[in-house]
Image (cartoon, rainbow over all chains, first blue to last red; front, side):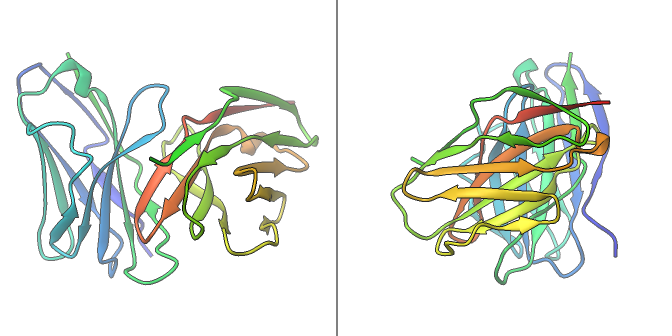
Length: 114
Length: 113
């Protein structure tokens, strides 16, 4: 079946603009996760959704970052007033709500803020 | 706080040879999972192997195997008979509970023909 998809694949934006990144999880996966991967770094956890609610938003770096999930499916990560330090690859993953809770990743969105 | 350390930023291996990637982690928990993920240039994170901490037996998946030393908090990945397609970034990850993964900074593996 189809895997996790993300759009756009690449996004170039000017400093100060808002951007929206989209994630389509695997059908039937109740959990959804966003990560940020900066150059030369590992993945940094941003937020976790179970259904439409986000019990853990602890990784969002500032109030410029927000995310929502609708219909227990698609999720959007929004970054307002983008800064150059927001440049990174943003990865989305999804998993079933049952053990082993294995996460399946999308191909990511590469965000470049100029 | 839990941490995952990969001390080898880059490794090289000759095709058909064996290579071992190192990973150490820090936790006070006794029940957790450890993973190795592969990230090729396509950026897609691919699960290579999983180890449950309560299992003493080391996990294996075809040419991939781990050496899990719980007391030493060490979790290394051995790749046997290396192939050109194995070239990628490899990330070690720790998971406690049902969802929160902590990733290391990765090891870039080059496979030489």
